[in-house]
Length: 137
Image 1: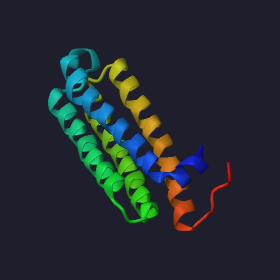
Image 2 (image 1 turned 120 degrees about the vertical axis):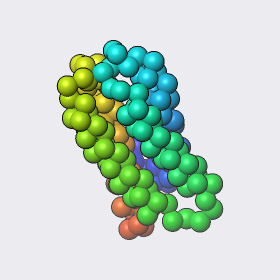
Image 3 (image 1 turned 90 degrees about the vertical axis):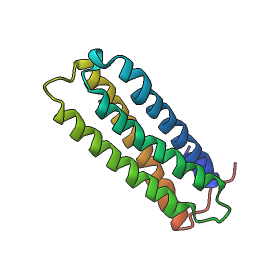
Image 4 (image 1 turned 30 degrees about the vertical axis):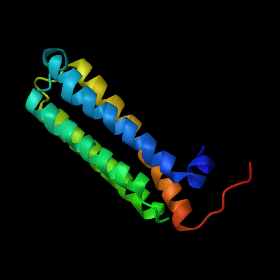
């Protein structure tokens, strides 16, 4: 899997952008409508939903970019993704008294998936920065 992303890093930006789009929709629409079920106030959900929208814009920029400096750009989105995880944890603990088990389950699942994606982005970025050739298929 890493070799595929190393040879076609724009696909990793696409995957990140699709995930960010899904997060923005779930946080900004679905969880807001089910605020009582998840226990996170809508104002916080809107803030959390805004961040993935910014990530989508970044990912689209990286996909459309014609230069071949994807390594540093991937490292950037990986760092941004990890920052988003930290922000999500802060929001979860800030709303500790109201967040439900469903809210925790959603946020922890999203955080784990984002950390997994960021680890792939870091590995691919490192390979691209160090000019590691891909294996022939």
